[in-house]
Image (cartoon, rainbow over all chains, first blue to last red; front, side):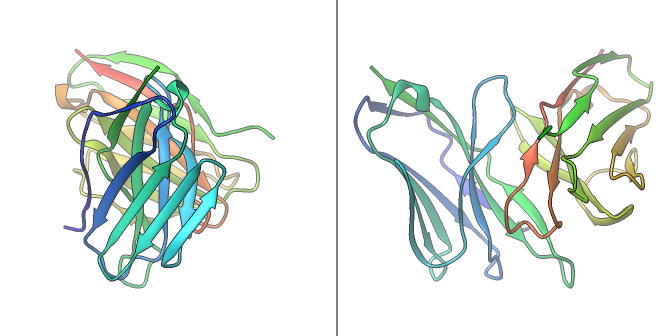
Length: 114
Length: 114
């Protein structure tokens, strides 16, 4: 069973702080990694994708990938109350010769306190 | 550009009945994936269709089935409903199926089985 693991939280940070969200995955062959944000009662929304080892920055968000350690993280700088949501890590799991599908972690609930 | 459209938004069914959910992907997207989301299990992959063919399937019983039409619209069917089938069912579309760009989710169908 190929898995994606996240701490469920809740992770609570003060407004303006850096929020750090972590994810590990079991399939060494995975090549595509995504972070989704899901507000309560809404559907998941893609916020970041990363495919190579290292960091990828987009505004206040930075995704980090370490394939050797099978570890993906998301940093949110200058956290705002509007960032309060559940963050889902998703990994492309390959199925033999197929192009694979996205497997999601159970999500980390982030709360940003004013 | 219209997003992913799921109908209906809410459904209440009785145990033992069957249900059909519909999904219209973003125009030009040929891949449609279905997920079940519950508080305990998170997002779980049901199946993926690409060009009218089921390309991937998750670990769900045969009561869960789907299909895709030539215009890329997809339906999923659940027969002999059980209380445990109560969940948010999410449809996601992708440009080419290979999740290089991630998935775009619809608003979901909330199914309640009583």
